[in-house]
Image (cartoon, rainbow, N blue to C red; front, top):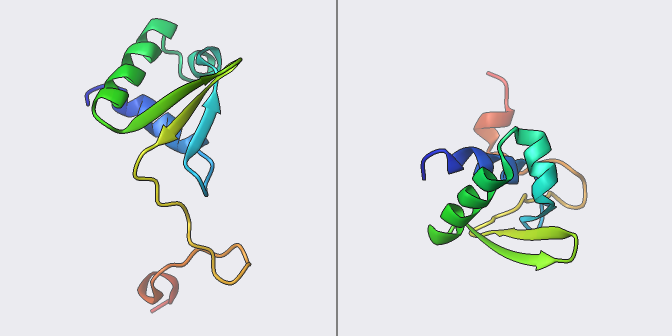
Length: 91
C-alpha cells in the first residue's frame, strides 16, 4: 500500500465510529495532512484498487466507506468499550 497508509490512517481517525463512513473534502484532507490534492487523489485510488475503501461523490464532499469496518461494541447503553477482563483489571 506504500505511502497511502497515511491517508488510510487519517480516514480511520475521522470515520464515524459506528458506520465507518468518512465525509471530507479533498481540500480539508490537503489542509490536515499537507499532501497535495493530486497525491491525495492518487492515494485514494490506490486504497480503492486494493479494496480498503469505496467512495461516492456527494455534492461538496466525498463520502468514503471504510470496508471491513467493525465499529465499537457498547456495553448496555453506556459508553464503555467492551475490553477483555485481562486488559481492564489491575494486577
